Length: 489
Image 1 (cartoon, rainbow, N blue to C red):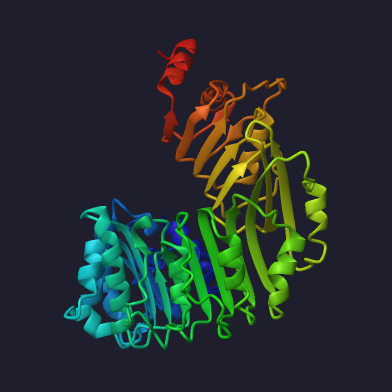
Image 2: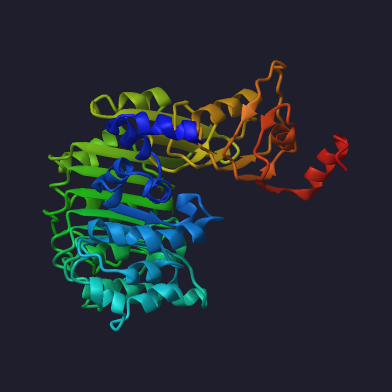
């Protein structure tokens, strides 16, 4: 340990800072503050004191977190509180951290792992914490991941919290309402809520119930908004014809739209909405069009891009599904690629699949590098590549997946955590020279809708290497048969 410290202490300041920036700043303070004056001056640099993340899961200190937090509050926080500009804190420790001292320069706050009820109580008018920070906070992140009461109450709680935030924080410029993929922070809006507005908010990230909620957000109540990111978790109801979807949005510069599941009203909702954004500079679109049209480069150019003369950054992942029809020509993958010839700022990848049993034609086009954390419906026509952001994938085909395909998947998705497989076709695996497949980060494997050969593919240690602890979803009868065959039972 002494030898390691001497080596660390001998490094130039610039190299030390590069190394320490790779660590969580709480670990840096806990380990190095107070060792000597030189290290103190380095770890007290604004690089490390500007933003604090105090969360068990993030810090990787679950077992030692309480001891680390005690020392941090008693010995470290009093030395740096005046330098802190942003704090990310979890529900269990937020009151202790925020009430411990004053934070004169704090302007950003992230509240994580909240229950809906805890968040509701936090934003009541009489809360001392809110009174202390409501005039200085300009950036706010809210992450609700649980509801202790009936699930039906979450709608009312969320709109209450959202309204309170807009009312109480007079200088709010950035709001992220829903930092995780949890469904507990979806908002549904009502045009009668006159106090849902802000003349200061510039950037909003929000999870919505329906398309009409998106239109309500853009009806003028946030007239200074230049960046809007919308996620919808499910298919929504019909867009009401009384909601204005024509008025121009000249201030909007960046727009991101993600629809989990399938978008029902591409032509009547999304296209008219996008055409209102004539000054848009950055656009991100992620959705599935289940009933067409086939969205290729020519379609995007004609219906969207030509209405945005200032657009300089376009990221997308779009699935188009249509019924197979022998009387209608359906473009090949080569046709789809050629339609993107004018997209010189984008590297575009496409995959086309014909599913005879489902009588479906599927076309998937996306910009690369791929930035989503999930990739759905991968088939044997997968185009390869490196997907460092992806943590969850689903695989589906009417043709069998062979060993080499899974080897390719493991190479392309090095940080994969969740894998869902749907394939009822028997593997052939004619290649006997099989390379070992490794999924070092996998925590969840769904083999419910598979032929029994895929159970062997993933559970045979000679074919696939998995971590020691993986949640496995599988038909018990198939698992039992495999175990008896391999003498595990």
